[in-house]
Length: 324
Image (cartoon, rainbow, N blue to C red):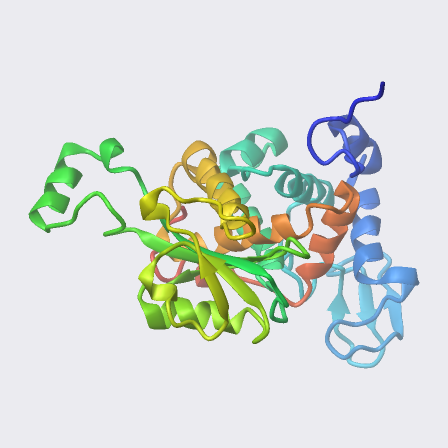
């Protein structure tokens, strides 16, 4: 009797050996990135869109030059990879690691595997996360599950000084001092939409759910008072009375995403700064939404998604000045 393999066995994965055979050098990896951006060989200028171009013999300053606007361009231009000096093979490996690491991948891991500076690895990964930042572009038809969770370090792991400061400030062991992430999961498509929100008051959470669901959608939540009065067909389970499932009424699906995210937070990243939390949330949301694709298709999806999403290091760290 045949047994199913663990995990999503219908997917076609890629082993490390297969990955290195697929991308044995920078030239092969560059051609793959071009195929994702310009399918069927339809290469064009990112600045003016012209398909008339010439090939630079020495590939300097870039491999192609537009015959109309006279601008030089490459597959990197206008993407999150623009101005990067990192080789295409290393970029392909980074894309692979970020699509297959379901609990996230640390910049220390990428730095060790590829042999680049940790700060460079961190910047690469933040640029790749830009591909996940697009999110869902239309509301869910439902039924959906909605929930929110607090993200932050555990009080028991804080230093004595930090705990003393929290105590003096009157901050308890709950959500005080933590960031709030809200999310909805569509049961039919299994798609998720999540984001950092200001707080857990009724106007914030109701608006969050209503913006991401159709008016005819049924919404399932826990018994948090903020969801009462939401402009949707609404049912809830009473967690405070230890009721977690009542027929179809539960939030187990969206809570599974929170569980996975927190495993990544505590076990992989150990800390995520408030400034960059939205990027990590988008990463886990996006990876959930493409989880049924084969690994190479996930990588291709992400390679296309970073087009038009260039980000500069100075802008990335402008607010806090330090990498998470």
